[in-house]
Length: 365
Ligand SMILES: C[S@@+](CC[C@H](N)C(=O)[O-])C[C@H]1O[C@@H](n2cnc3c(N)ncnc32)[C@H](O)[C@@H]1O
Image (tube, rainbow, N blue to C red):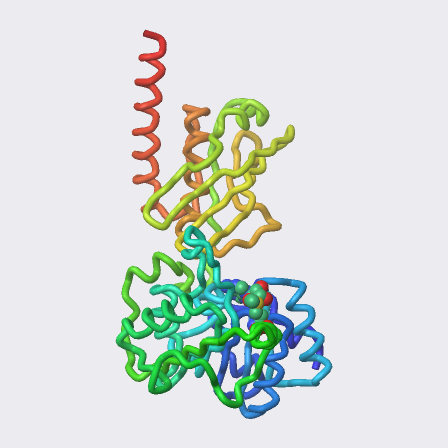
């Protein structure tokens, strides 16, 4: 098998694809999140040649090791991908398509202030409940007792799940592969904690979960948001760049838009933008450049391909409105941004302007 068939690229894969086509056969599908050096996925895929396995990893270094292992073993039932686990589930899996999820030693984030970075959270469990088939399972092993208890409690609270065993947490699981991390902790005499749950009931994913996983609702590629402004005067990009805001420009529940930096040249501006919605963080450049004479276009830079969430639309609109603050006589002549976002953003900016105005009057006084 060719390497490009084994290692899937996020940008080349359609949203929620037909996995049967990708594996060239219909078979139960299993996912491992955080494959590390790939020893577990190789072991489980060899043991179950009748099933298909996907392994995802956020470290390129580990992914390379795992790819080598899969290639050396000549496995045809494994695909690997460089992507964050919950993003993979949201973006690339349809409802009830997954027969099981394995997570071996997820990063425990031990410090209290870091605990919210843990992969397994209440919204994650709802997402998993939606993507698992009936009777599908979730299996995790960790050396962190506190994390094990937290995960077991969260699963117990979700009506879709029942424990796989008499007790939701076990300290030994016969015939389960011991990965590098398992061997490390065991050699130090430390216990391991296995958590297992099975989906026994179909559930509707509650609406609030989408605030954390905006891609979970995606069904097809969205049109790229861009705006064209007619300015009717000479544009000095240097002056414009100085007037554009930096830092957080929009903040709502689970939603942040931040301008990290602004670069300018004679013929345009590049805005390094961070857009966060729940657990999805996306960073991309917005370009501002001349378009057909006295117009300027505000768009996502060609080299970037963020998922077009609502916040990406909002980022383009905010930059457009900020430019309109500078070019007061400018006119929006073309837009592929969602119209419904213009008004709330406009009134927010207007509100800010009034406050700025009041402050400057007070300062003058
Ligand atoms: C402690 S290591 C365990 C590796 C392997 N599972 C094992 O047992 O040897 C955790 C691994 O998960 C990866 N990882 C952490 N969070 C992830 C996420 N949200 N999605 C995908 N991979 C993740 C890390 O890069 C790392 O390789």
